[in-house]
Length: 237
Length: 218
Image 1 (cartoon, each protein chain N blue to C red):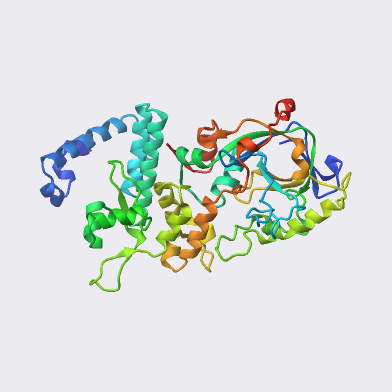
Image 2 (image 1 turned 135 degrees about the horizontal axis):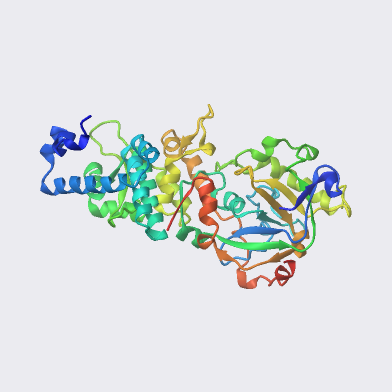
């Protein structure tokens, strides 16, 4: 049987892809191929089958990245950060993608200053991306009935962001809203994501769920320094 | 947790005993007293065994504890909401964990093995919170019982030695294997408190989160 690797790389790509790739793009393809080969060499057959059965690019990347990180023994922080970025990428993919700032300005028909104002005032949810910029998940916007008007942030996004306060960072909040939740089940008992419930008219319920998650159960407790010391702890053991 | 139930603990069915020198975990806000029995006077609590009416000065306060870190995470952090990832930074900013030890046996209403004894059904314990902003109570069934239990305790009317119990033993409705305690302030002298630590740097955090499929990020 002829090996796939006996074929030129060009044969593995679509003509459309080949036509659009510039020299830098080609370098990325080669670099990825080299990286994929180094990862594949460290994987057992089961792991390879697991990677190949990934249904989305993000989940495929997740398998490879975990393996790559494990093989290169990164710091715990680096590994956790990598997992976080992958989890965020998977949630973004599931919900229909995101706009980078320039795309958001174009799609929404607003200036950079307006977009920044929406982000700073809590009108849109904008998780930071790995390069320091912000992403704008498309699922939070309402598409107008006609093409004459641009999409706008769903009116309940602001209330949801206000309910979260500082208790959830933007990537955490986005993933909570992108995950099916039992507390948001519809009349038939089907779990819905926060975004699904919001677009179905249950934005108040979603904000209530986030407030429930974010509100400390001991908000009325006195400060630590006013509390009495507890010498009995040491005596108990 | 060294727990014995009903007759095996020398108690009637529906009551449980937690042995002295049992270690527990208390989740609380950083900088706030861990050994606080809430809610504040004059407010309605939003936790599962808080009274359904504004707390009066004569009403007992409640302090919630868990057998393990995972129980504290379920009850304090996740609260029935699926959170795919948690940030250590966020956790440390908003949550702390303090170890607790019992210095005498605790006698508790047993909602693990004796739910029906107390007029409740399993669904009352496991139902998800009502999170709608317009809902008068998040936990109608269990909060509805809290007032009656407090009155019975005040009257020393429970069928246990002395007629009073220290609180309630229950299973987290968010994690079926996690035993938790809601203690009334009658139990305050029975608790010894360790040193609080930020939840994000707890050594058991990753293992506990991994057990329920939650990714820990920096």
